[in-house]
Amino acid sequence: SFPIGIRNDYALCSEISDDGSIITAGMYEKELGGQFKYSMYLSKHNPDGSLDYSFGSGGVIKYHMGNENCRISGIHIQEDEKIIAVGTFKDNNQYNLSILKFNSDGTFDNSFGSGGIVTKQIVGSFGVSSMEIQSDGKIVISTTIENGSKFDFGLLRFNSDGSPDNSFGIN
Image (tube, rainbow, N blue to C red; front, top):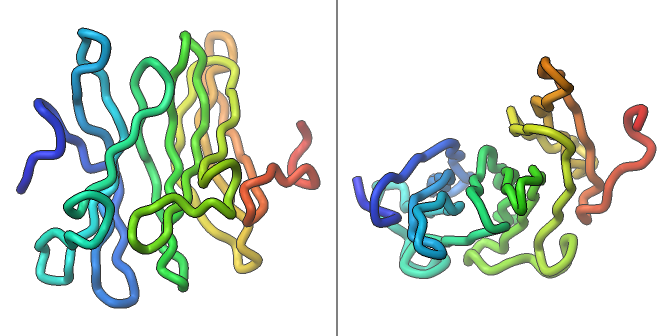
């Protein structure tokens, strides 16, 4: 084990690449504006479990979105070793979806979304359940969305460049 943040770290997902390296992602606790908040992280490990120091900063990418908590809930390693990560963040009491795409060295893939990041505001409480990549590269995300006094299932699809797939779904 190894620490990511100053207090609590949570690994929420992992995936193994074709070369045997392991990507793990989740959230870690840090001090932000005098309060403890959760930020997102990805770490890359060699097949023997040691950190891959060529990835990010010392084997880890730490990133924060919004002014409240954020996390990565799902990752996918593409054949070209680029990494797609999906998660949530809260900003000014508003829940948001985040999709981030990284190059194999941990830098943002600027060909995706805006500087490697796509966000979508979601009304009500929101959580990402899972993410899959279709054979055509489209990103499918299943969610749980608060709808008044109950929670509903949500399904979102984005094109491989991060733009919303407007041909999918009913709204």
